[in-house]
Image 1: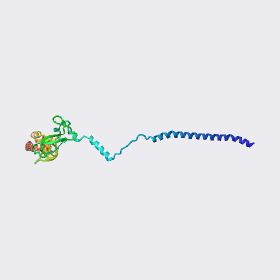
Image 2: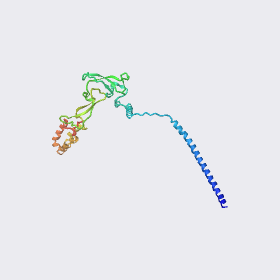
Image 3: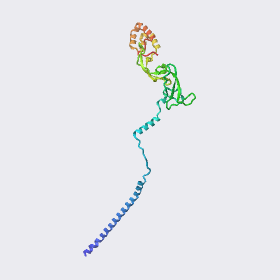
Image 4: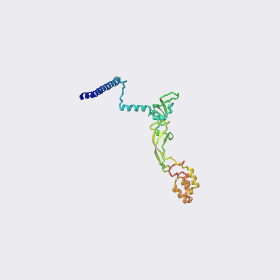
Length: 266
């Protein structure tokens, strides 16, 4: 009797276990079917991407040296030559500065006599002839002489403010000279030359002479010229009792006494 009651009570538990097993099996089948569909959906585009890689691109590897050479060539082609700053465009070829043309040296010319030289304009320079026609080869006329033999008006030199102009013998200084742009000559256009000291500090000879005549007894002329010691000597000696004043008038009048910095009068 007890055994029948126990079997009747265990029957619902068995049915619950069976139902849970069935539900578990169905859930696993659903999950497996979902994974396969997901795998199938993504596998096809992946396979397509592998089969169709798209348009192919080719790349050329340039060596470093060739790349630098190409870059320098492009840079040089776009740069303006430095001499172009002095070369006017569409002007007369015979009026071009010497830096804009190249001339063949005429070694057979006679010094001091007129001579002709065959010249050619440099690259990127444009000029015309008398008929306003473009040309590159032309002839110029000039005197046969070297650049350092030109007159002083045809070149420019740097001045020196350290040499003494009032000296015996008169001092010279070594300087660099450059020929003017439109002057043509033989040899180097920049050269060294010894020149006499000819700079000025702004002192006027007329002012110094006037001060020496009127206020020379008080040393005004010496003070004006920058000679402070002599000026104080004249001031406290009343112009050397007039004798020093008369001597300074003569010395300044003939130009023997000049500015203390050694420059020339204006």
